[in-house]
Image (tube, rainbow, N blue to C red; front, side, top):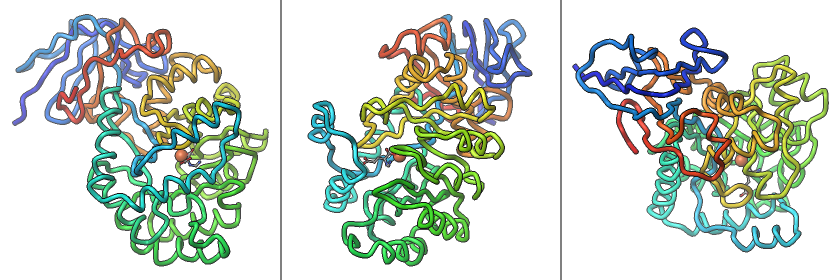
Length: 390
Ligand code: NIG
Ligand code: FE
């Protein structure tokens, strides 16, 4: 039998389990967590912790669930420094920049793509991310999309087929034929590697009818929809996501009242990605409006070389608190339990009996410091599936 370990002397523990502690985050002061194998088996006040084989002293640091980053694009080659520089000199972001990364990704070897993916997953892990979704979408041929998903599936269980990122440059004159490819032979080849199907529903990418066709085809092959929705302008993406029962509508930057109402009445999580607004100088999504309407909100990085080249959930938490109307508690919940909801997972995003033992220690007395001390590398230890990895 695996040895049990107790992490004790935790100043403040976020469990995301209201029955265990105070408030919606279920915060326990002077806490301990017991891990057996890859699972949490006990969490509560230190003084009540059961006897165990091993003891780890958290030194009065705060602990919280590992971050669940439910939206990233990590299988790519090259970067887009020139495009970023041009934006910071006044140019605006356009979906067409994706083509630059498509060309670089197609030209890269499998080994290069794998090395990049591992680099960004490790970078995220050091910043506390223990679950990371990632997408294809920079291949846009049957072979290149399948290759991206195969490489991703070897490193994460949360893999999304995004053949419908933009119309492939090879089909610039015939977008309908590209949709046929994405919903036909490309889907057939890619579906075995993926859990989710996604589409970029936006001017310059796919319209509402095309997005519906892509998501329905994916769903018919057993992939659950998620949607890049209402990022650069208002469009049909959010309402389509809710109508099709998508797990998540991602971005949600340009919303009407009807969009907010639709999200509030359905099961679709609104995933906000402030790294994208930061690095495109776009208006912030209004998290407060969504939360006040009762929408479940997740917070993720959207890590990609074009619109949001950050793997840092703590950075996104700080932005969400400073500029999107979230409280520190709400932002931490959204980056952990919210991300888990967006991935329809109940085994991650919480520290309570039965959960996968994914948690981190902060060099700080509480989780509030993630927003209070922006840009400071506070994550000082990480466990994933019961194993100390940082
Ligand atoms: O989520 N919006 C579409 N896709 C990415 C951007 C991809 C890119 O610019 O390379 C996003 O922001
Ligand atoms: Fe994205």
